[in-house]
Length: 347
Image (cartoon, rainbow, N blue to C red; front, side, top):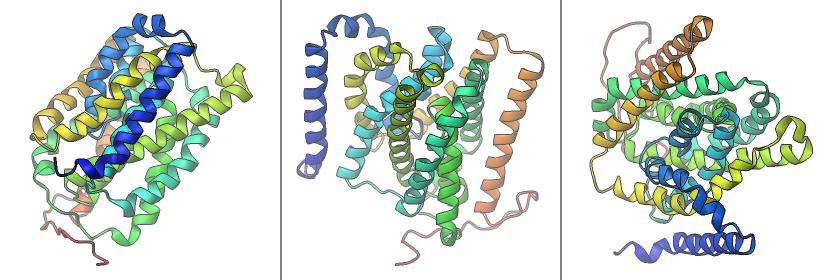
């Protein structure tokens, strides 16, 4: 209750958004569209909670539901993920900033700069030329790898406190690299940069979750706005290559008011209950959607080998980050004490 007065920017945002949404739906005569697309609104009730309470965007739930359950193209799932996160994760970000939760600005700022470069680059030169199957497989590989990493390291990640000062002198190049690579990945699947900065913080920087998750939410929100804006401009400029399926807008209309409240609700709830149960369930779902994708798309041969190799590569990367964060050679199994600092090393 004491924090309510400082949340006024969040209340203003909600008021402006819902007024604009109601005006758009009413004047555009879209109420039948909203009602007809109730399944995606129901799906995003869970998806938006995940977006606000974990380092995963709402597109992590929306993408497999749209592409696997509703059998829609991967490009539609990508664009819907970016569009809906531009409301839900922006809403969660405004709540996070208004409630003054810990954010790792030293890594977030260069990450945003990298995303500003990498996302339009990927949207222009990469995403349109990736086949529908590989859009789905890249998404499945990224999040299966994330799920496996969490299930293996969850106890240690949840127990971490503070943040290591070991890599602080390299914040700028590390953040830029995460932003560029994550921006390109997000331009293909609609998510990914949130996972990369989160993994960097918890594995390399040994950051606690209360700092890492809000940081990942804000970076994904920023990238989503850049991504859907880039795609909209490209669609207007060269529709034969970059056209956005009209179903993206229709699904967005139905789900937007749900995620505007659901994502910040997730950010609030996770500060009141243990994170472990939510992260375990989500990690299992990440692995499950990988298997679902392989079965649904009847993946075999080189595509199957490529997907399995992708999971191996991502987990090798996580392994390397983990041991570098401990000050170890990632190719050796020795152990060293973890150095943590609860204060800014420059302070």
